[in-house]
Image (cartoon, rainbow, N blue to C red; front, side):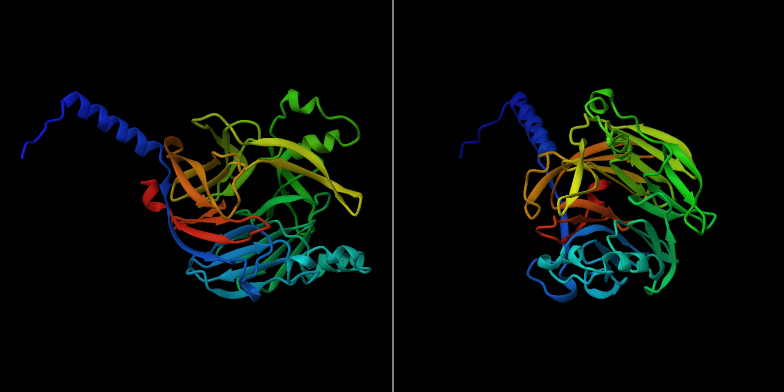
Length: 371
C-alpha cells in the first residue's frame, strides 16, 4: 500500500483552521434535569419564573411571580414544598389576570402589607438564616421553613429590583426612589436611612427623545442596572445599561469597575408605559436578551445572547460567555443553551429560565467549561 505524505505547511494550515473552528463552535453544557415542563401538573406547573436561588444544601428555590409563590425543589429537581401565600390564587395561565376584576382588590392588597401575602414578587435572596422576597412595595422575610418573620413596607419605592440583608442586620434595597442613588438602606419601618451608589448616566441621544410628564420617571427607570447579582462574598455586581461596564460594590462603596472585552451588543432598548384595562399602570424597561452577570467561586461570568434573543425559549440559543478571574478578563467561549441564564450557584450549576409562554428551569453543569 502506498502512503501519501502531507506537506508540513499544509498540515499546519489545517491544524490552524481546525483550531479556529473549534474556538468558534459553541460548546455543549451537560444538562442535568428540567423543572416544570409545560405538560406537568400540580406543583410543577410554573407560570412565570422571575428569579431563582439555591441554598447551602443545593436545594433550588424558584420564584413564580404569577402564582406568587416560591417553589422549593431538591438538588435533583424534585418538588419539595411551596413557600408564601398569594394574595390571589392562580393555578393556570387563563386565570393569571382574574384578580384585576376582583372587587376587593384594594382591601386585599392593603391587608397583604402586614400579613406577608405575595402579590407580584420580583426578586429573591437566600442566606443561611432566611429567605427575602422583594414584592410590590414591600419586603417579606421568611425563615427557611417558610414562616413569615417580618414584613417591611418600602416607603416611596414600589418597583424593587432586588434586596438583601447587610452585615448590620438592616435591609438594603436596589430600587427606584426619590433620590439619585441605586441602593437604599431601610429601617424597620421601611424608611430609607441612607443611600449609596450613583445611578448610571443616560446618554443624551436617548434621554433627549423623551418629553412630557413621564420624562423624569423614564430617566430614573433607564438609569438602573440592566443586570445585578450578589456574589458569594456579599459584593454587589451590576452592569451599566448602556455600555459593557461592571460596577462592584463592597459594603457601601464602589470598589472596582471592570470593562468588558467585547462590544456591548444587546443591552438597553427603551422605556415604555404599561397599561392595565386601558389605564396607565407604570413604566417598564425593555431590552432584548439582556446580558446577565453572575459570580461563583471567584469567577465573574457575563452571558450575552449572540442571536439577539430571536430564538424560541425552548430551542437552543447561542450565548457568548465572558469569564473574569481575579477581577480581570480571562477568556470567552460560545455556549448553546435552552432558555435564558437565570442563576449560577457555587457548585458550578447554571440554571436557565424559559419564557412565560413556555416556563421551565433547566439545570446545566458548566464548571468544567470554566477551567
